[in-house]
Image 1 (cartoon, rainbow, N blue to C red):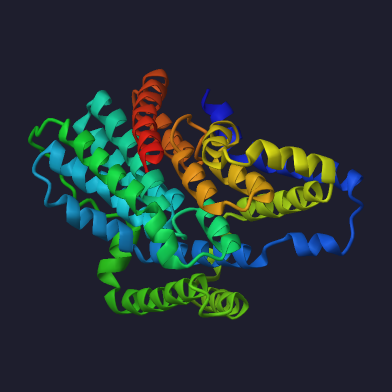
Image 2: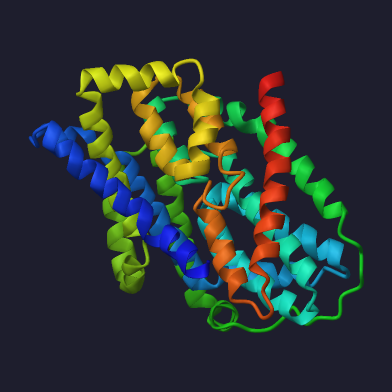
Length: 377
């Protein structure tokens, strides 16, 4: 089970995208028009945000923050509030994937000390749900949001207004779920030092300068998202700055995700040029965008679902809602969910069946409530 899910996370989506692009190239002969299929602005923004967040991580900012905050937790419920809501709010800025990669490992360090298998599963699942739901609020919260926001040409205020009701409901649901945790007193040391935390505390001047530069680069990325700064200028500045500050970070971006985007761009562009197929898919999606997006996400995950469906409808607001809600449900509905799974699977005395059962049950509850909210809205 572990190896299968790891394979799904790292290879299958990319492979499928490449196969689809390759097959479609036999139907629509490759030409210079292929370049027009690719949304270089989205790719540039994704790459820049990946690198900037890696820069923040290299400073130990997130490690230090979570260790400081957990010092204020006196019981399991307070600890749960801190860990889960960190994932919820930070995913809005650093993406759901990065939020989980950043905060779940620290969570596991604490959970190993507490040594309560049921509590461990519950908290890691809630962190995963929180990251997937918090990330839906902003255009930079996850890859599908950035892509759909870019091609829809909607304003930032329109996007935030669209997703605000679902974000508020999600927050309330998370708070209620955390309140189910018993306030059992803690007896842990949340001040364990990691290399990144030591870098942040011991080399304060150097780290402060680096943090300021990464913050400036992040600001440039936001200005690009808001269509204030040209993405080419922003990307050149980010790449040059990262190369000078810490060139090794250039290797830490998720290039597989970027290549997957390119393959899907080619496939979608070719399919749109096949009139019969394009019309059929458009008729299937038309008027059902949100529910089709939710359903497709359960099978292929929400990022590919957003890219595939965007070629056959102009109702991008419905796709944004559908692919974000669709990140709940199955373990592969959002690829970010597999990140938490992989961390949990490496824990002592991990119980995979119990984890998947709890994950599915909690996700379905959240998904059903949010679908009802969508219907009522």
